[in-house]
Length: 103
Image 1 (cartoon, one colour):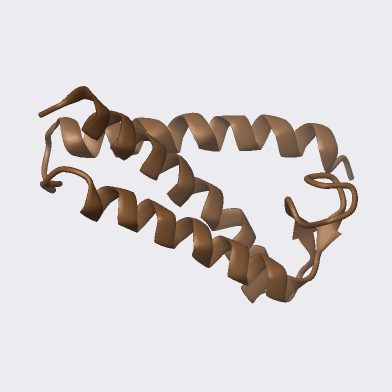
Image 2 (cartoon, one colour):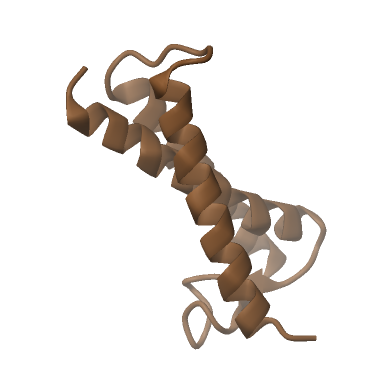
């Protein structure tokens, strides 16, 4: 498979991981940081905005997985690349939110 397919899977994992905090906070009725807040990524957006933003992230991740290459589930490089993208994004988000959301 071409290298860009694995890159697309990696980026898909990043989008899928980024969708989780927005979607979970949104469906829980809580405000949460988003790119649409003021100031962007620091201010908090409404729960509805976060549900929508979380779903957009999930859709982009799904489109990247299904639309690029021929994704195969199982213990293979396809799944590993999605997993690595999700892990790296999750660690980055944990680091970022720990700094900006001090309670």
